[in-house]
Each structure stands twice: as C-alpha cells, then as structure tokens.
Image 1 (spheres, rainbow, N blue to C red):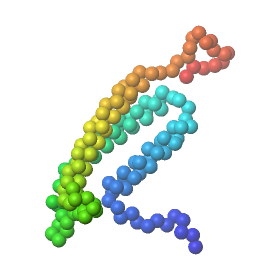
Image 2 (image 1 turned 180 degrees about the vertical axis):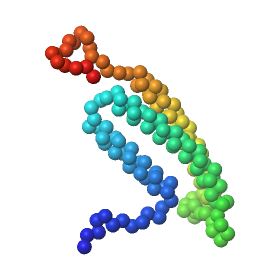
Image 3 (image 1 turned 60 degrees about the vertical axis):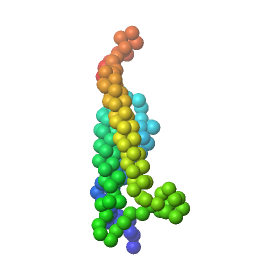
Image 4 (image 1 turned 90 degrees about the vertical axis):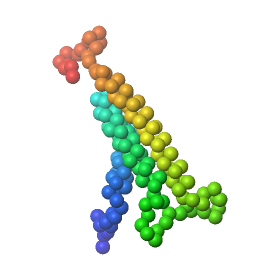
Length: 147
C-alpha cells in the first residue's frame, strides 16, 4: 500500500507553517532566477517582493521583541522557563538574562531588516526607470517587429 499523498496533520501554529512556506518559496526563487535570462521586468517584480518581504521581517522582529523578553514572566501557574545552560554557565542561571539578550537580537534584526528594506526600495525605484527599446543604429532586418 502506498503512503504517498497521505500527510500527517501539521499541528504547528499557522505563523510557523507560513514562515516555513515563505522560506521555501524564497529558496525556490533563488533557484529559478539562477537559470533565468536577465530581464528588467523580472528585476522590478522581484524587487517589489523583496520590499514586501523585508517589511514583513522587520514587523515580525518588532512584534516578537516584547513577548520574547517577558516570556519567563508569562507562564501559567506551575510552569517555569529554564535556560539549558544552568549548572554549566553560572552567568546564565536566570533565563530572563538570555531572553533579554534575545530581545536585543530581535531589535537588531528589525533595524537590519529596515535597512535592507530601504536598500530594496531604492533598487526597486532605480530599476523602475529601466526599459529596453530597439537601437536605431543597429538597424532592423526586413519584417522584424519591435517589442
């Protein structure tokens, strides 16, 4: 009996599932673009999607910052957060320290994504002014049509 096409239900949160789909999609974009002929319309369209993606990454990093930092304090009664370095690293006995560091990392990620967003927007703007036309000095063969 074949099990192809039978999938276990994915019980991960939707945000995690969508992040996986997005990452997989961008890897596919890179793979597809490797074999693509250079085309300014493609550059323009890809730039727009880069802008959208960097904006989403910046927003997600900012959205996660507070919940990550306060994660240890938001556990239900009877639950506690631990740092798996406890007992090994005396500087890391309180998981709040690592969570605070993680929040700083998210802040830096948001800043970096914002910078990448600015650069992607500039690229998008620059490439939007590019076009292709027939070169009058090259001449046209009989019956050749300009595009």
